[in-house]
Image (cartoon, rainbow, N blue to C red; front, side):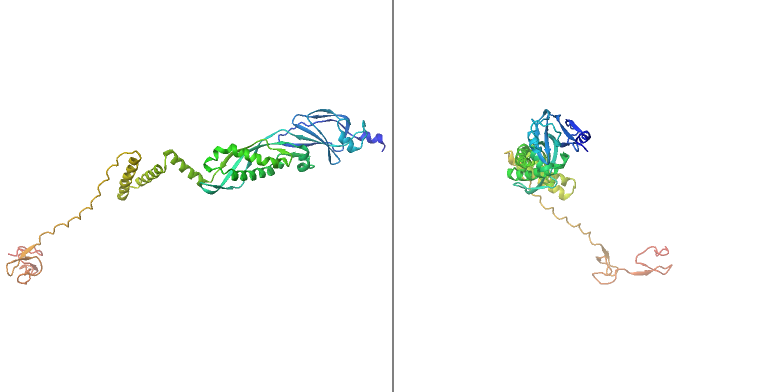
Length: 361
């Protein structure tokens, strides 16, 4: 095939540009496979873009935003790599990368596992944190060499995990260096964010990236620590520790009142007096007199025994306590007799028989 036939089979690129249809592409390689770039072709680099020409695996020329007519004048490095004479019009092959230099916003970061920190108030505790950050390309050449390589489309998702790891590492380090008390963490988010961003930027720069801003949205404490802070909040709202103690005593009395009983009533009276003493002491007022101790109730007297019953002995006719025998003569008190009608034994002195009802005398 002659040179003329080869030239007829070549497709020449005359317009090179990229309009980003996505919101997450950092670098895009213009499709130039098996295509020749014609001298005099138009290259358009829009705002927030940088055009990079790569020839034979080497970065040749960079183009800032603007419109260019490609010639040997504005591609000096590429001409040198290709060994073309100045003013040559021979088509050339090259890879063209567009680097997106705008700021990528609302990127999320967070701690997948709790971070240990030492608190002067609560000792070692585990905290979690999350927030957002922004990203921008600072050095397209360094990014292409160190990260992208030959990737035809490089997105934010491909590097977010690595960047997030750097942020979490520096957050843990900054939290330890700041030595901020737990009670003041919420008021120091801006200071901690600035410290983490400063420590992280040097690592981002190694990839050719910049970290314009980083925000800490929340630092989460363990549930038990949050409960302890709630208790301290109650104490602060009331005043000092003495008042906090009285509050807890009042809460205990409230719980005791739910289970009324003799012991609960006594506990309520005693606790009420102690609470009154404490309140009077704090208000510099005379203490109320303490209630006199309750005397132990006198034991109840046993009911008087009824007067012993007495009967007249049928033998000696003297009064004697009721029983089976007389205490005076020793004879039986009950004299046995028989009913004249039914011949059954009846008590002595009976006028009628309890068995047949007949009259005895």
